[in-house]
Image (cartoon, rainbow, N blue to C red):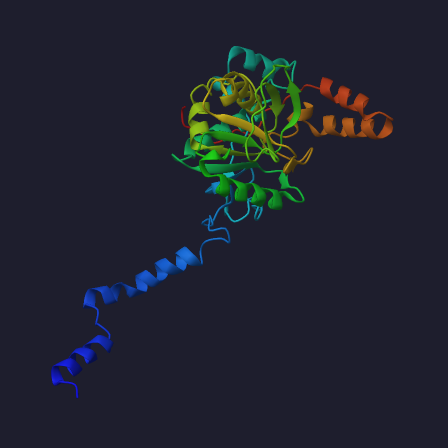
Length: 328
């Protein structure tokens, strides 16, 4: 038969060893950690990020306090209303002499300022850039930007590639600017080698193109900081300023900030609706001018003639004044 000491030893081996009181208190936290690690990861083991393309804030520029903020204009992030400045002659202090001449007497090209409302819009974007915190990625929309069919799926596809590629992704870091509604892209013909990156299916680099459109774009803190350095005084429209900076100082031209546009327009502006800048794209500022172009465009077989007539009606009107801006 077994001796009493041996029986005692066997009994000790099969009994659970009690944990000290303090480790027992850590068990709930250990369980939560394991749950997050195993369940919170995707099928490929990559941790899921809550916000698409790491966007943490979304701004919607409007001049109407009572206008409803659009829901889910950027999936998964609450949109913040930004009450923009309205155009007025008091903004002349921000302009270069050439820009002042363009506003008062008419412009000669699309990059130049056509009205006081265009000046106000420029300042509205600048004020939002100042709000971007280090390391932050922000989406900015003007009030008439509309998400197009399939945009959400494209954004989600880009985000999956961004997560997979890590620091090889075009979206790595915060020194980038991506316009999602670029139109009238002018190629200056410079011969730059194509840049190969994982998200190239959806976005393309802009090494030597003048483009227009700031109705919807992503901007990182690094890009905002650089653009703010020479943003004053105002000499041209806000989108022309960004595009000119991309051509002269973008990453494709020796700089540090990456500039690109989406291969298709993920958001579009509605013509003759936005009151952030009115209808400055057509250089029309009164209801009579707008009505005239609509009549000509309907009555004439070629709307181009009506458009050309409207382009000649350069009569920028003053706005209603606005809030005071902080100095750059």
